[in-house]
Structures are given as C-alpha cells and as structure tokens.
Length: 312
Ligand code: UD1
Image 1 (cartoon, rainbow, N blue to C red):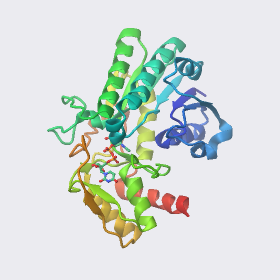
Image 2 (spheres, rainbow, N blue to C red):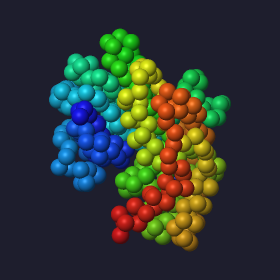
Image 3 (tube, rainbow, N blue to C red):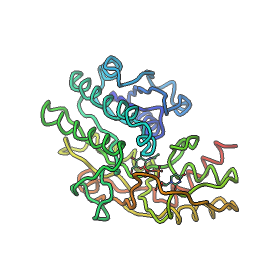
Image 4 (cartoon, protein in one colour):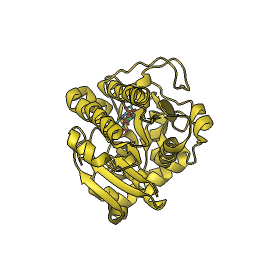
C-alpha cells in the first residue's frame, strides 16, 4: 500500500481520484482549502481518508500535507479561465504560489513523484489540430499562463533537484460532481443544470468553438498511469479523448438527451476564449498505455443521470 496526497481532493477531479485510490486499497490524504471543493464530495469515502483543511499557499500547510507521502496528485487550483481574467492575483496565489510551495515541500519530504493537473489552455489558438505537446505555446489568459508556470516549475524541480514530476494536460474534463453553481463552472455542468431546470443557457460567441470534452474517468486513469509509468519524469502529457465537438452540437445533444424544450441564447464571446481545442493523445498512448475508455456520448449519459439524481 502506497501513501498518496491528493491536493484539491474535495474538488471535482480530485474526489474521483480519491475514490479510485481508496478502491485500490491505497492510503490517501487530502488537502483542500474548500474554496471551490466540498466535504460532501468525499462522503462515500470519508472514513477511509485523512483530511486536512488548509491553503497550500501557506508553506506550513504544504509541508504538513506532504510529510510521509510517496506520491502527490496536485489537483488543487482555481480552475476557471474567466475568473482568472477578473481576479488574476487571487488565481495566481492558488495556481502558482501554492504549486511552488508544494514542490518545495515534496522535494524536502522525499516524495517519489508529483503529478500536476496541467491545462490545454496553454496552447492558446494553436495552428495544429489535433495538438501534440511540443507545439509552441501561447497562453491567452492569466489562468493559462499560471498553468504554464506551474508545469515549468515542475520541469525545473526535476532537472534541478531530481524530484520526479509529470504534468498531465487536461482538456475540458466533465462528469459527476462538477459543480454547476457558479458562473465560472464548466460548460457541460451549466448546460445540464439549465436544461433540467427549464432555464435558458447562454452560449458565448457563435457556438462554433470546439472542445475535446473528456469524461472524468479517463482523466483518473491517465493521471494514475502518469504517476507510475517509467521514463516520463519531467515530462508533459495530454490526457483527453482526442475528439472535438462544437458548443452548438453539444447543446443540441444535451437537449435531446434531456428532452427539454429549451433554446439557448447567444451572448458576446468570452475574452481570452480559445477557438478550437483537440488533443493528440499519441504520447499518452505510447508512454502510458493510455486510451480513453469512456467516450463522449456515454460520459454525457452518465453525467446526466448523476445530475438528475443530485438535483432531485
Ligand atoms: C476548461 C476548464 C479549465 C481547463 C480547460 C482545459 C472549467 C470550468 N474550465 O476551460 O479548467 O484547464 O478547459 O482546456 O472546467 N461557455 C458557454 N456558456 C457558458 C459557459 C461556457 O458558451 O455558460 C463556453 C465558453 O465560452 C467556452 C466553452 O464553453 O468556449 C468552454 O468553457 P468552460 O467550460 O468555461 O471551459 P474552458 O474555458 O474551455
């Protein structure tokens, strides 16, 4: 049994990682500030998990959380692109300063490997689709830049101090427990909530922007593989489905799945919004033996089933 720290473990993706680790019989500690996470996300496994409430932007919290662990899955973040545009300093604290504190703590604690939740937003409006990891990066928002700084710090800690690190670049992750309650929430959670409540959602821009929506179980699989694969330390790996769908198509699919008689309204495009996003997942396939197990239609059906139950 290995000892894992999941930062942001009370959040959406973090709580899915925690559940899988518990299922595998591993020892799990969570650190979470509960700024965007909820204790209820860990309800099913609470008795099996050590929970530290605290902010990793404080070095003492990072040190206490890292003490004695073998692996760190660093998921804690303020994960919203638009929030970073309106609150860049607040987001920098959570996305960059906390990550640096955690790396120092992980190095000092002799952690075996740290896996970081990176973001496809670092690619910006890239010319190459599907996008592989080595294209020139073009962060268009504070969030994208903060995630890029994070992954460059990881790389540096590997080369400078020998701490094994891997960045998994996520592409629009969705699934059960993604919180639909804020304007900063992921679009699938917002669309589903609106449709189930009979409210009109807003599509920002013309709706022809595309995303590689990735069901959360694929991410759990990719992250845990990245935590243990040999020969990947210091690297960056896309974890996604490898497809691409427009917001208009997504909304149409969700509308027919829910049967809701709701039409979307259109609003101005979001500042810093990227146009198209689609992963080349060749590196994850080759280095991790990863391949997506839950495709978009099945992921949407599962998420909808959860949302119906959670909202009732
Ligand atoms: C998302 C993630 C980010 C991650 C990135 C990876 C969230 C909240 N953000 O950013 O953490 O690093 O993918 O690529 O999960 N939209 C609407 N109407 C809405 C909300 C959004 O039309 O009510 C549009 C947006 O303008 C955008 C698309 O939907 O074009 C996706 O937006 P969003 O879910 O916020 O995700 P990203 O900004 O792509």
